[in-house]
Length: 261
Ligand code: MG
Image (cartoon, rainbow, N blue to C red; front, side, top):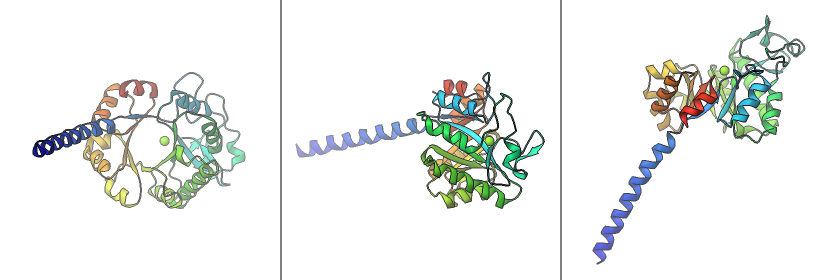
């Protein structure tokens, strides 16, 4: 009788473990959407604008990405390109930047304006802050430090993730905010070395993952997140989902969400 009970207990534990192992990969395969420069393709929106962030928040997707530059007098401006309407953002003062208008008529936002919108919102959408590579590593570090300070001041640390092509900016963020999620963008490093630096993710162009699909599982084995950019076509979205990435950064957040869900 005791022998039979032991056998049943063994079978029960075996079945339970198998079921658990089967469920975990399914959960891990859920892909999340990040709006590249916000939701900017709809009427009245613009890249890196207040509207594009608000519309991404309204979609309740995983994240909304922005790009930041530090002016010579310490203001953190939100824009993709280094130059806007002939003005090099990292070489000018806030006085010149505040006159700049986006294609939808808004003034160019500072990081603090977008943090205010995020703070007010109850959306689960996180802000993905890309620190642009500045003229030299120290300026990139300075921009990273200014962003960390602004985000900490608003107590928004848990609702923000950082990304950068500048390895120096990534390292500076990790040093200043060890619990922050930080991913490297350049695509020229395997996950292991980045993990040893304390970074928490890789965020690479789709071509890098086509060349190195093994980096996805390598990153996951180290507990790192995998983000891919910029994936807009349905076929590429499906391919990246099948590869097992965690986040897809896209200019088509609503479309991506409809495919990955
Ligand atoms: Mg960007």
